[in-house]
Image (cartoon, rainbow, N blue to C red; front, top):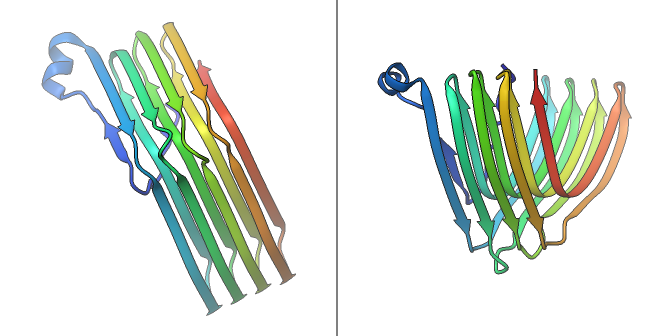
Length: 216
């Protein structure tokens, strides 16, 4: 089974809905109804300065509206509704200065309106998912100054409206996924990297709707 998506979300409701063992033994079926509404802004801001370290440095700033993670081992029926209103402003800002690091440096800024991950190992699965993003702008900003590192440097900034992920090994599966995005996604990286002995990777991504469905 694929490892479920995990993230720390600022100002969001996290729905993890496992089925009890007793219920699983009686019916071998999970019926999950998830409804999430976010009408307010969610803001994450990290300012960090790291000097003279002998190991790795990893810093994250993550903001989101609604997030759900569902993992079952049974026949599963999922109905998901996630809504973010027009008054919401979802913002992540990471300002980092990292110098004289013996290990690797990883800096990550992420924003998302709606996210859901469904991972199941049953005989049959049915998913009906509706995600509606009306936020002002999922906005992700990474400002980085990295110098004198003994390993690689990875910089990432991602802004997403709706994200749907489902994986299962069920031989019978029906998926209905509807994503509506009425927001502006903005992702930006401003970075200076100097005197590093490893690889340097910088990735900035802005996506309105994203779906990943894996059946095996």
